[in-house]
Image 1: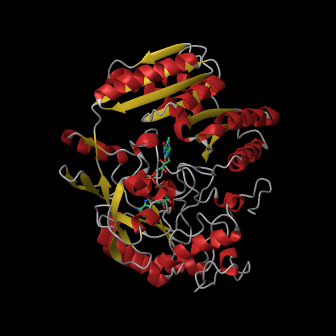
Image 2 (image 1 turned 30 degrees about the vertical axis):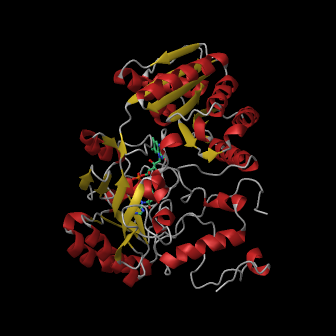
Image 3 (image 1 turned 120 degrees about the vertical axis):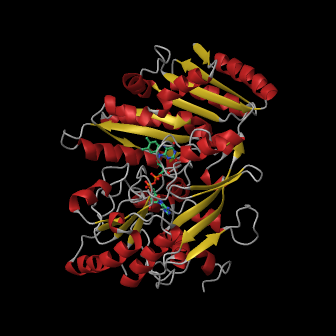
Length: 507
Ligand SMILES: Cc1cc2nc3c(=O)[nH]c(=O)nc-3n(C[C@H](O)[C@H](O)[C@H](O)COP(=O)(O)OP(=O)(O)OC[C@H]3O[C@@H](n4cnc5c(N)ncnc54)[C@H](O)[C@@H]3O)c2cc1C
């Protein structure tokens, strides 16, 4: 059984630089400067601090060195130099990650893809685009728009997050309910292996025979290599789109509407829900003017052929009314649609208006368990005296509880962490997961043993070791106890149950 004991301690900070590691880094500088140019290598301690965290600011570490390559060949040369010197390295896109995946190391090199922003090709005929990893998510859709196409995965951070980061995190977004996650839209990857070799995974069609290495790489959180080009699938812009905003007195009423929509066989592009506290924050930040007195709002977006959308809109309206919606708005044009989405898309940042500090949690539960888990979250919040605002992708059960605390009050941050962990326990207990889209990174590696047995974690690490035998590529992320790649699985824990039963063979 996975270990289900209470909130585990945070992951230890990455090791501090020793005299030896500092010398190794110093020795790399002339070579890296010859590869990336003087302005492509950052060594100034103040400038290095710019990169000390990602969107999860509770984990911080100043990198030993930062490099900003301009091409795949430069990335390969940097990684080869690190591999030769046995210096760890971490990739970073835009640094919007929320699990500390891009947390650098004092004894390592941070490889930032911000200069690799070329959209190399848009091919409307094959509905494919080839982009560099530093291109922002929204830039792909903007470039595809004149061809009647768009890039479907749409994290709320899409104006700034990079496609390379999206691949590493297998990012989702509001419209992933119908359109799928990043992994469903990536058909080929050029990568630099952890030994510094430039190679392609997948043939760009998404139909290549053999192991699905593109699928394995997508979501691997920067631990299997560095992505240097991405072939993405483009989707036709739907003929019609309707956006509805339904206001309910309680979350339970809103939740009932979600279940009824799905059980009717309707698959909206998005179903998003916000509770009263999240609405209050959004009002304070962007004056989204959601209906007054709402205990919950539901945003339902339907897209597709005009006749289907028309019929489904009428059906969703009727369902929402039956579930108790006291006001339903339908966007009449793109401006009104944007206004409805403004509140939802700004919700994470907006919470800063009503609380000095907060944790953005990311857990998943089966859709049917939503009402029960939401009740448990509000009970846990009441017991601990810590406020929780709920914003979530209701259609796929991906919760984003925002745990609010005052970091100037001693003990509050720790209490918020405990509450945050208790929410994840509820997700696991209801058959869900510790992350839906923000990844494990450094922050949630401690929760992995709650979901997986040690043998299963070992099996996962075999994949990591196959790509990165030296353990230099984003070490300390995803796994609570990194294994050395020379270790044989099973030695620490006895034979894997599948091996013991004769169903599988260790070799
Ligand atoms: C306000 C806000 C809203 C958000 N909304 C969503 C949302 O709706 N859905 C969602 O899924 N996420 C969301 N996120 C989280 C975040 O934006 C995504 O995880 C995003 O994909 C991270 O991209 P990035 O370029 O910022 O990556 P970074 O934070 O720089 O890195 C993330 C991870 O990717 C790795 N990485 C980066 N580039 C590469 C590369 N070229 N090759 C290999 N590994 C690489 C890093 O090592 C790290 O492990 C949100 C974040 C914020 C701040």
